[in-house]
Length: 197
Image 1 (cartoon, rainbow, N blue to C red):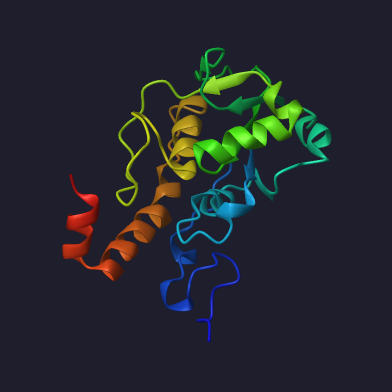
Image 2 (cartoon, rainbow, N blue to C red):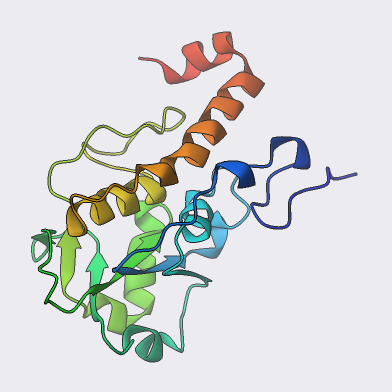
């Protein structure tokens, strides 16, 4: 029989993260497009980001038929947070500039690229990158490359740049608790053997 879960954070009731999830407003609008394979993942960081940001929306799917409408949000200019040769490093915006609609694909690199391939309006967006970032706090996964972050970490890094000097670090509290809980469940010895270099 499955354990009862929190309807909001989707964690088992004994490990509910809701008390740690902030309620943050942002000038930037965040649209997270989540590949369906990530929905039931124990470490669903996109969900945590969407719950902690008032101006965020999480959509799940592979093909988003309503993408043109989602991208045409009045008062925002859309860009895709995804590395590539054409990607421009994010910078703090002027208060007089139109705020960004930051579109963030959520999934493995392969699944994120698939989302771009299946949704041409997404692939056509101007691309933004994070530039130099702190190492990931995602101690349970080996990053596929230098500078790779979980979705919530990438969103926090982007908002910290776009809305400096404001900090969005509070979004990482439930993420850190989630990682600590997973490590505690597997035991220190197993964690060290499988996840420490």
